[in-house]
Image (cartoon, rainbow, N blue to C red; front, side, top):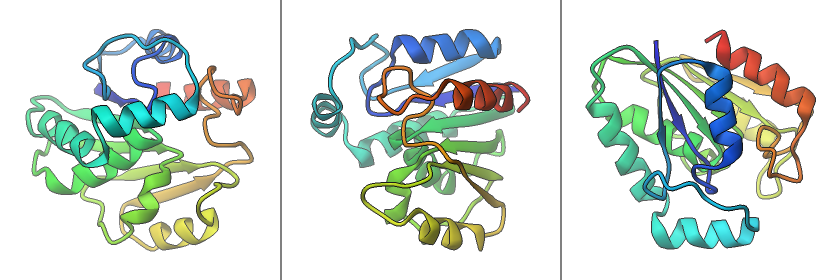
Amino acid sequence: MNYIIVSDIYGLTAPLVRLLDIMQANTEVIDPYKGELQPIDSEKYYYNKFINDCGHDNYVAKLLNVFNNLTEPTACIGFSAGASAAWRAQLLTGNPHLKKLIGFYPSQIRNHLDIAAKVPCTFIFPHTEMHFNVDEVISTLDSKSQVTCNKTPFLHGFMNTYSTNYNVKAYDEYCALIKST
């Protein structure tokens, strides 16, 4: 199985490169910034950079292009804005090589709850989100065919060592899940 890793608003960072090393698999990283390694900076800085350099709709289009050109069985693993973009793009592709989607803390998914899953999708949510009720979103998504949601006791960004919400226990647990996918 091949893997597509879709970054959050921070793009390609040292923690994401570390995750690729842990996976020891054939992976392709999709990020908003043309594959350039990003220095550490504030979330506010990267949110503005993401909106100005790429934006949500362009991220979906970029990922859809990747999905449409898959030639081998591939799983997609997305983080935050990347997970939400993957949710939207999986509906639009007709490529049978996309086999599954795993999305970590996909906060923008709250704006796209009308979408259906064309591939098996697993979403890992934080305990709470500042801008929406996690339980309501999970309830809506769980009612969909091919969608599974897991609510963790962790906070948004728990997989990113740059995040103030990074949690080593969660990171180890979910890295093991990713490796077993």
